[in-house]
Length: 293
Length: 168
Image 1 (cartoon, one colour):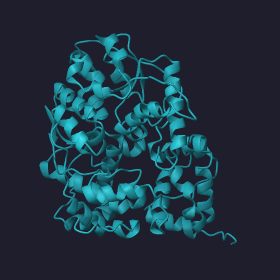
Image 2 (spheres, chains in turn purple, red):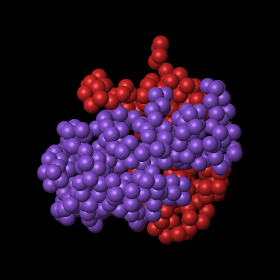
Image 3 (spheres, one colour):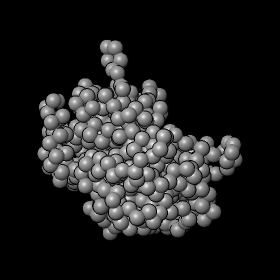
Image 4 (cartoon, chains in turn red, purple):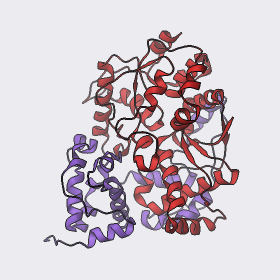
């Protein structure tokens, strides 16, 4: 059993509790033990707060890292944004003395210090590198045969690759292989590496929705049964985005189910859909469940 | 106002970014070729921003709201044949713009949620009930006073102009 400090961030617990439910129910089945640290705050997010002040962003992230260090636990994140922030800042504080001094000076005012004693891991890394495809394959109770899945990585799981060290920055394969390990089929599609656009949602919603539109259109064209991903922000864009695309100027009637990868994993491990939060999906997933059951 | 060519701006960026440099940019445009923000917004163009930085057009660059149209996907940073960390430079430029009070209005909501709740999305009563139905534990409640204190120490209040609410 591997113990991790479970870093939920803001969006999963407060907007997408069914993603949290999937993590809490599924990961322990693969001997990943999630330990809550109730004092964890916002990571803070890398595409708003970092842009305002990199120092403040590092210092606030330092609080979270220090909390995990106090418990002697590596951090596991589900969200790409939380991952990018915590991994980047943890690395900076381990390897850049001037940053470490500056941030620890601020943290000393609240009696905290980052020592550089823990690692920050994305759930994708933990599944692919630690648990491994072989163990996952041998744990599958119900193969997801015949399910065609369009995989989306999300930028901040893989880039900047020299810092995040998860997968290739342009041709990643870990999540595709994790999908195939369940007996499902990861299908190729155009615009697979297109960004979800969350970073410009607040300033140019119209074009951001075109980014969502163009990807979902390609997924639909390839007759995928569903999309899958791990980042909650990407998840929101592709699920809520399909509802928003029904109106002008898009007029697109997409109905592509968006399955959280940990939900697919849970079903393959033999869980009943009633144990997961499928009723909270904004785009119906019945067509996928009907093929599996 | 005539634009003055100068190397001061890029020196300032290298100092702020500790080793991050735009000096090796030879304006090939690989960053723009793979940029989703350029493809969709048509007006955000990383090569052009790097050009303005090379030429030293500080005021023009930091005032232009187009700076905030990058999605931060980091494709430019990975693709640059010269190893210029384009998106990292964008972060530094946005920090410098913020110092001048030039940041998008919509970030104010995020700033106050972070300073008041320690979370940029503090949730609602409806979500709490849904969590109970799903058997999930209470949402994390960070020590907001700690977050505010380190924010203050690192200049966050000063650059964002955030003022704590009375009694908060």
